[in-house]
Amino acid sequence: MRDGSSIHVARFNAAQFRAQVRAAEQKARAAQRQAVRRVQTEFDRVDRENQRRVNEYNRQARRQVDAHNRQITQVNAHNRQVNTQNRQADARNRTAVTELNRRLRSGGSSGPTYTPSERVLADRVQERVAALPERDHDAFLSYARIDGHNVGTALYAALTALGVDVWFDEVAIKPGVSQSRQMDVGVRSARCGIALLTPAYLAGRFWTERELGALLHKPTLIPVLDNVTFDEVAEYSGFLPDLAGFETARDSVEVIAEKIAAAVLPPTVD
Image (cartoon, rainbow, N blue to C red; front, top):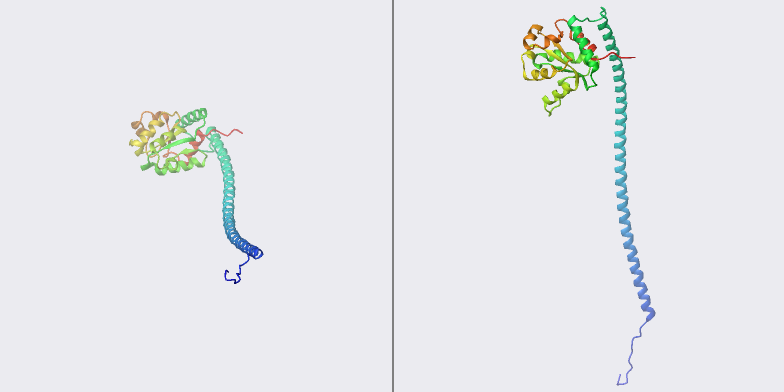
């Protein structure tokens, strides 16, 4: 100072400053490492949780796939069993139909016999059917539900048991689709037509008239008379008496089914 007193000036301590800087850097690096560890820890936690969920989902998916595969295996085994049973049934049916043809054509007394008009009908149907290409069904069964349901159902069951593929409305009709169109398709898809003629059928109700109108164009039409006579049929249509037919008044439904099966299914050729 001007008065002669001494002046003290603080000196810059570079070493101390550098030490402070290093300490600050170390502290910052430590804080950074701690933050990174927190982030890594959270990341690892999330990753482990995601992996756990993925593993659990995969285990459930494998269990579902395994259960589905077991079901498929069971279904396939069942289908193989059904196919084997169907092949065996087809073989039995073919053998039975061949035997029916042999018996019915032999004229012997070992089985049901034809009347002369039935034999003419059966021979004509068998000849025509043999010349037709393969179709989806062997026969289309037309009947009046009001009085032909019981006999129609029994005839369908007896024919099916003999291996005849029959279009039958109770089995073939699908809901939600035009019934008349399905019937038209059924008539076209069958090699022959079976008309179960009953009093209600001859009364000319809409469906039976429609079906018979289509069936009359088939040279393989097979009439089956139930509770009606040929005279009554003649009053209804001049075409049917010329075709002859089978009668429940003469034969049981099972015998009629045998005669029809023998006519519409060709014998097995070994």
